[in-house]
Length: 218
Image 1 (cartoon, helix red, strand yellow):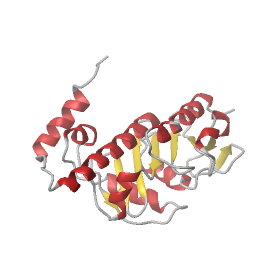
Image 2: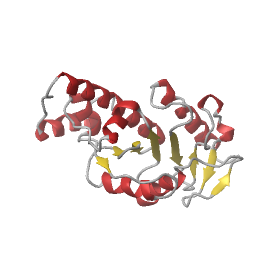
Image 3: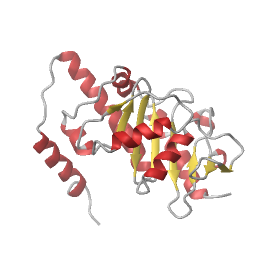
């Protein structure tokens, strides 16, 4: 079996999505690229999350062609692969329809960076791109275009949901969790009134502290 460790990692990370209420039923997907081979491990299409295992993950090449796996890969495979081809620094991509973040996407609205936790994690607004149908590379093209406009590893797709990226699949999953947490808090704030804002200077300071000072340094 190809890439057994990466298959297990991707299978395990899928369980973080329902755990954090980011998906329902079979929606959403996680993928990871193996830096050495360039091969991508991704969720099989339409398989329920409790039934996901390392063995039923699908391995594809960077063009989305199945290299190993008994199931068809996710319907978002072409977009995941497009992102990887355009950004060799990224080795993890996640897609969800998480409720609050997708509510912003439904009205074509970016999630504003107005709380310190979001400044820490994203360093910017989470932008909302345009609409594209599922199944081809079009969504991936929008994601890449939006990533050029923001520090954020998360972007919204109009009327669709959330895509997040990372140096590995775990980082992309973390970004998906934090994007939904930020969206929920900011949506709630909007119900209470006009939210206060953070200056660009303070956002940059918070993001630098979080990415360069916070946590353990080995």
